[in-house]
Image (cartoon, rainbow, N blue to C red; front, side, top):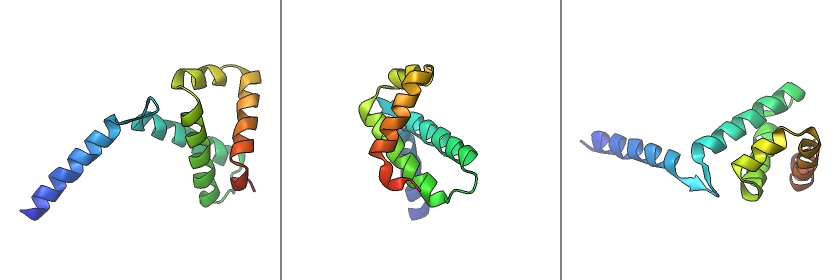
Length: 99
């Protein structure tokens, strides 16, 4: 009985977590951004430690979510000049995770 109750509580928590918002972003959107960061980082630096990927992407995504709306991020990624400026800001704000 306890097992049945705990599994229903866990499933409710998982469902509600996906619908919560952080600065206008859904948890799902943040996960997608984090995954994109992880894949891009591993493509650029194939031998990078998973720990550096995790810490760097955590910092990058946290900075992005706090400072930009999703629509703004999409526009930045479509403009190479804005993208370079954005990457510089990420480097400056997440410098402690650079190798």
